[in-house]
Image 1 (cartoon, rainbow, N blue to C red):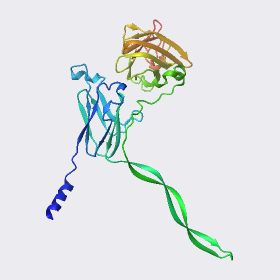
Image 2: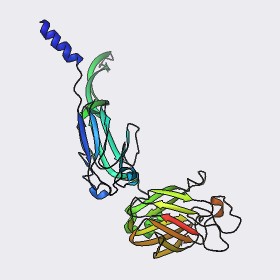
Image 3: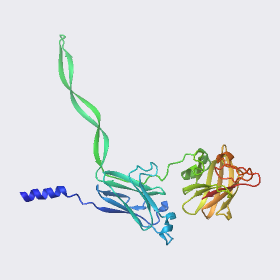
Image 4: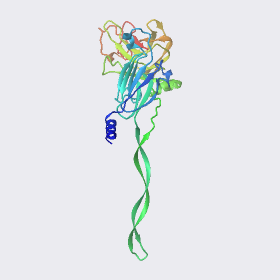
Length: 345
């Protein structure tokens, strides 16, 4: 009897053995052609206390790991989804090619995750029992007192049974599932939708243009392209033409359409790719907006737009009243030459 009690005591004291599971980020997941096999398994079921390791199976051309910060095959896994954003549960930071990072899940529930830089890289971790609250219709028989009047006028109270239906909340266990989420919010742009009805799914938005120069005066540019603009940076160094950079993660080709307020940019006179190739483009106005369409036939990362002007008040920078170079969203006006507008594509 003593031996049985001792065994039970040890069983209660010893914790359940935790396990470690791997989620593999597959090769060539830096483009959304990896769907539905960007990560494997996309849905992983574990127990509380278990650890998950995200393993980056990619590789970069650079031999020196110190240069991998700019590698397009780095991944940053955070909780949440591209539309709703992070829920604040975990953020693994950057996982460079050939490395891994882990997180231990101690709370039951289902935790979706994604990579903000590659939003199609998505998956879900189901920890323990997944429960939801569900509304159910419940039918019950309840006693009801009813007053009955006889033929001679005598009143009596009798108890009858009445059927009633009520709504109640029931907690039920559910089987976890995972479905690929949209990579980005849908941008509704009436002008671009009317001009390019066959390209509505590629309408995108880039916000906070000019944030690094003037946080109180930023702008939004809607555009049509098959890749996301990754970053923007305005350069206003003394002695250098003011420029605005829009960066893609890799050199791109295709037909790029930019829609900008007329207040930001004058007529686009020339478009130059990577500083040495002039690209064909068209420029039109639609009400309060300028539409610039550029054809990129050979891979390019930097497009320089030469424009007639951009509003002077935007940056509030005076350069001796002589030459001020134009950039999308940078106010400039030149009396001697056409200013330059730079976009890192």
